[in-house]
Amino acid sequence: MESVESLLIVTRERPDDRRFGLGRSLDPVVAELHRRGVRVAYLSQEDAGSRGLAWLQRWRPGFARWLKRRFPGTDAQALAGGILERLNMGRLAAKVAFRDEISHVHCHDPIITAGFQWWRWWYGGLRARQVRHGLTQHGFGSYTQALHEDGAPLDAGAMAWLRRWEAGILRRADWVMTPTQAGRAQLARDLGVYPLPAHWQVVPHPRPALSFPPRNEARAQLAWDPDWFVVLGVGRDAPLKRFVDLIHACARINDERLRLVLLGPGESVALRRIAADAGLGARLILAASWEPAVYYAAADVYVSASETESFGLANVEALAAGLPAIVTAVGGVPEVVGNAAWLVPPRQPVLIADAITCLLRSPEERRAWSDRAQARMRQWPDAAAVAEGYLQVYRGAPVTPGLSRQLPLEMPVSKPLSVYPLPRRLEITARRLLVLAPHPETRLWGWEGCSPPPVPWVGRFGWWRSAPVRQAIPKAGLTNLRLISAAGNCVVRWRCWVSKTWSSGTNPTAIARILPDYGGVSGK
Image (cartoon, rainbow, N blue to C red; front, top):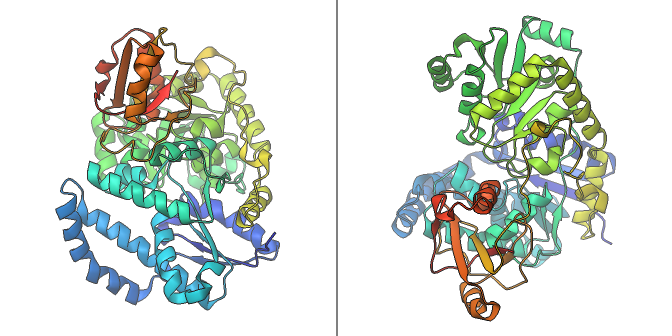
């Protein structure tokens, strides 16, 4: 088994980005790799240099025009800038890797990986394949879907093109990591990959290495009133974080002690306006800090209203602080938090308000959730275990099973109301087949499918092409075939809604559109 002598970590982070997510999770792992004798270098946007920026400015207008002509429904300027910025980071990674004799390159973006894959031949020549390289997928599912939801809106043609490109990038990489099992499964669905490739591995982010001061000291440091009931939200100011839902939820609670603290966005005129219109007004506190531990220590309840999360690092930090946590059951969040957080559906401020009110009125309930959170984190892998997982992946070895197998979700809770139910087994009438399309842009999927047998759980899927499905109908004696796609979102994000609506007898066309010409993924 080959040794890992040196490692180059490549991200597109800017300095402010390190307050959230990637930088905070990587730092303790990098320190552990250093301790084990691995020489680690770190590349980010700070290292791009003036020549790289000049290259971006020169190529962006022409590339944007080409994208606009080919994909007229796409935000071509944003897409062109994002692709070129990442390709340039990949070029820089190739240059540094061969100049400094790096043995392994870990990219944190598939298009950065593509840039490295192209430019390694320029800088490395015949040595190009001597440097092992791979990537971590930080979005829930494909990077293309994440870009569409949180970067540059894409039309169907652009999404098809980017998905094909992304699948090729991942196929050529020596490893692909995701932080959750759910994220890896969603990635396979998004890209039409079946079965799961052996080099796709699950390595979670480590238990946060934060030092939390006592609550009284933290409140004094922040100049917070000891009588306040503080609800804490953490993250960048982005639509997918749904701070607007959190503001509306807190505005519904008629208690002058309540304060909503949003850590991350800093001062925001838009959020202030939303709070004023909702009636929250001065009870909203906006903050920005490089030291989140004091905020976790001083808060009473943590809430995440995100519409999607691949992992949810802030959620894990809140659990590590022993905070009662209310989080949306999206992406990889249920897998990560298990029974240690109160799960609610996304875009439901009323339910968030109900959960906050319950915790506000019941110190016993808060203590129960706090105990559960700390118990969950005591069992979570630390930086040393995650660093060992990284090294196993770099060497091409399977990851230790205990590292990627998260704690079970079916754990006892204090009240039935305490957990938003996960999808149950699909209850479909005999001799009927439900086929769920993974994306709303119907002409995309089926281009790289195959035909494993149907599987029984709505969270697990087998890929089908349209023709084999239709040929199977008369052979199986099926009386009804429905092909549906969630209107405006990936159907796996709506699986609770779809399964409940179907089993209750409501016509699925009420929540999705009929797709008569396409096959998809099936539940039995």
